[in-house]
Image (tube, rainbow, N blue to C red):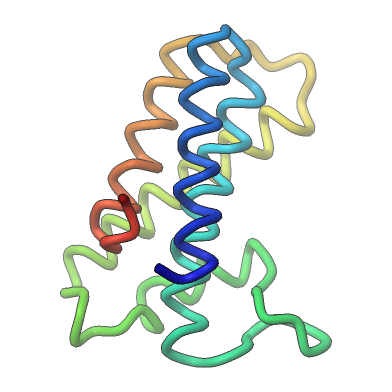
Length: 129
């Protein structure tokens, strides 16, 4: 398993634990990062380092743009790429709200939805253990 897949799985496990302890914001941040790591691993395995300044990983907004056209179309059909894109965008939105909007009212239902989206992304990518 690639190091990105390991990070994706570790982050998903952490997100689940955080949800169970009632830490919704932290859960959503880890759920997002789980999907980010999973997608990044797929992109890097196909394209090589894709981040700015020689970094392996891309910027977060860059990933949103790359999912549909740069995930391997031989492994993932258009419907799968679109679903990954939708889930990823929602997770990014949750993460921004969780990390940067202290007045937002995120709740357990948001955590459940975030975990569902992250799990779906990793399932499609085949990154889950």
